Image (spheres, rainbow, N blue to C red):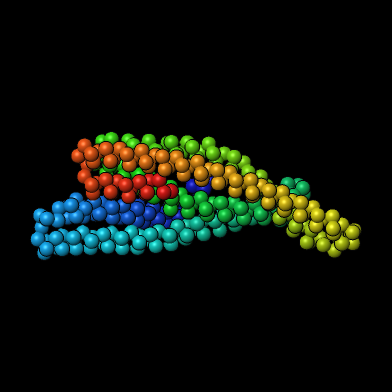
Length: 292
C-alpha cells in the first residue's frame, strides 16, 4: 500500500476529484428514495386532503426533483468513470515503466534461472492488478462507505433500532466473505504462478524453435506445454467451484439479513413508529447496502 501511495500522490488532484465525484454520485442517487418517501407520505396516502391542482402541483415538484437528482448523479458518474480511468491508466503505465527499468538495472545473476516471458508476465500482472484495485477502491469501496454513512444517518432519524440493524450486517458479511475467500486467494496464487511459468516456457520455446526441432524435442515440448495448460484449467475450474460456493452462501446470508430487517420495519409500521413512505425508502436503501 505504501508503494501504491507513492505513485498516487503524484496524481492527488485527480484522486481528490474522483472521490468528490463519487461522493456526489452516490449521495444524489440516494436522494431518489428519499423523494419517493415524501411522495408516498405526503401525497399518495393523503390524496383526499388535496384538490386536483394542489396534488398535481406537489407531485410534479417532487417528480421534477427526482429527475434533477438523477441527472446530477449520472453526470457525476460519467465524470467519475473518466477520472478513475485516467488515474488507473497513468498509474499503471508508470508502475510498468518503473518495473521494466528496475528489471533492466538488476544483475544478470538474478535472471539466469528465469525465462524472459516470465518477468514480462509478472510486470503485466502487477499493472493489471493495480488498475483493478484503484477502480474497485473508488467505484465500489468508497461509494459503499458513503452510502452506508448516508443510510445510517437517515435510518437513525427514522427510528433508533433500524440503524444498528444495518450496521451489524457489515461485520457479519465482511467476516463471512473473508473466511470463504481465503481458499480462492490460494487458488488464484497458484493460477498466477502456473500462468507466468507457462508464458515464460512458451516464449523460450518459440524463440528457440529451430533448436527444439533439430534436437527432436518438438513433441516433448508440446506435451509439456499442454500439461501445464491442463493444470491451469483444473485450477481455474477449482476456482469457479469456490466462487459459486461463496456466491451461494453469501447470497443466502444477505437474503436472511434483509428479511430480518424487513421484519423489523414491518413491526415498526404495525406499532405506527414509522410511516409507509419511510418503510419503502429504507427497503430501497437495503439494495444499496447489500448490493455491492
